[in-house]
Length: 103
Image (tube, rainbow, N blue to C red; front, side, top):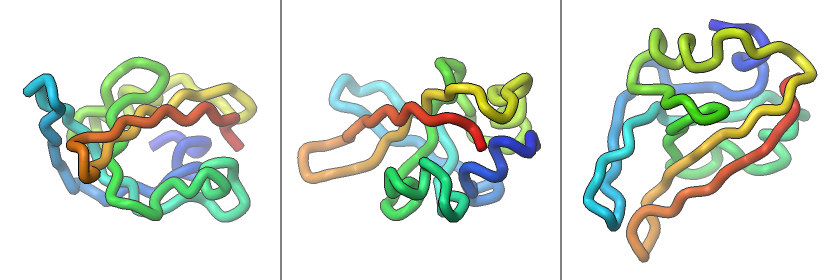
């Protein structure tokens, strides 16, 4: 896995899931279990809730570490990255996008 991304977020290894949106399509992703201490991701409270990482800069991260690594391939420290996250809430599925700089 790419060092810049592993320093930014922690993923539940091989924990796969999908969530159903109000449009009845499924979003596949990996559970986020934490963020690197002192990173912008930790400041934005990434990993504190029951969130799935769905996409990085557009491409889906899929449901395996292999597909995650393919999605983040080529990213380097200092680059801007856009993370799409999904979580269940009282109204259904909430999506949020975080824009961060890789450490």
